[in-house]
Image (cartoon, rainbow, N blue to C red):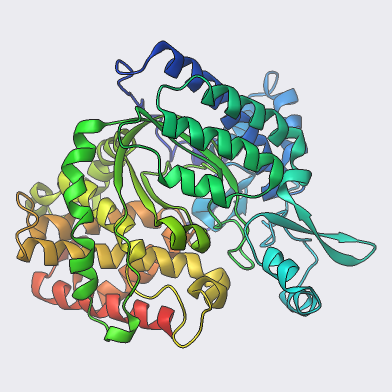
Length: 485
């Protein structure tokens, strides 16, 4: 990383605007009307997210908007602010890029900025069992009143935006053509008001594979809680289903147990309650909230362990975003880091399928600390997200070799997987060490270079196939043992 601080214009130049296209021809007119309402929900959840991420974000955004039309520099600041969803450059360890803005608080705005982890732990011990669960849970803000820590429900703290969002969700529910999707929208709209999300999480998992629309709307990811990785931040991803691709990839769901059975770990670390997730392939049409660049290419939700215990999880692959990443980012990086003879091994199908395996492999391995009922998340705390992303990445690569050997995968070679993954490592590490995927990738890249799986010579990188196979197996085991222990 250069010691010279880049200008906002130079930071913006690191990003490429890419057109995302989606086929809407299979939607009814009312489905299309519902999309408009869901886009409005997305914008409301963006406002919620800015309140969650930092106490000064909402006012700073308003100030930038007021000045942007008359000042090109401020206009660039606003553009980057909205691209990164805040005033910090994630690719440069959350370096602030707007004058007067301080360091990004680990607490975000879901805990008091002056709260220590020791104070939190002591306070939690004084609470009832139910309140202690809420304090460590997804859907409550911890604030300070008269010097004391107190709990406040999301539904109350963000009601200015969640009340109208709830109304729009229910209006959209009355329009969409698929009953199961309507039930999710209606239940999630209710959850915005009641702060009870479990029912709508289960209904989201039960959206029919025939529904032409898909959406992940609500508080989901916990990456921005850098104290405990516990509080969920609001986001909205609106999609149309790609029926043909969804049917093609469903066979890989049936292979998850095969992967679990062959993981290079002792049996006590295996996931004994594995539920293979259904796979949905979609194309994105709108997004809001916790959706900072770079665009999300896939996700495996929900994160709420209680919902997973009840109904499993669902893997969503966003095909138009993945094509954009491959064409606009991966191929140019390949030209920079690979030897010319290895460029032919960079392959979209290898990229797409590894992203698939990454998401599926979030379900693999231990999710509870051995000998306890404690989640891995609760013990690893702020390190959980990076370890979890690294686990899913490297286990996905382990799965690729296994599925090739078993004849489940044809048409993609292991060299294509490894070479494409090598290039993709540089794509992900650009996110910065302050971001879970970037840090997780840094862990993997360092290990694979030290193990000799990746080789750096003559200012280019390559794969040592024999060493790479063993390194992937070893790293998969080491991460899972850390999580289980």
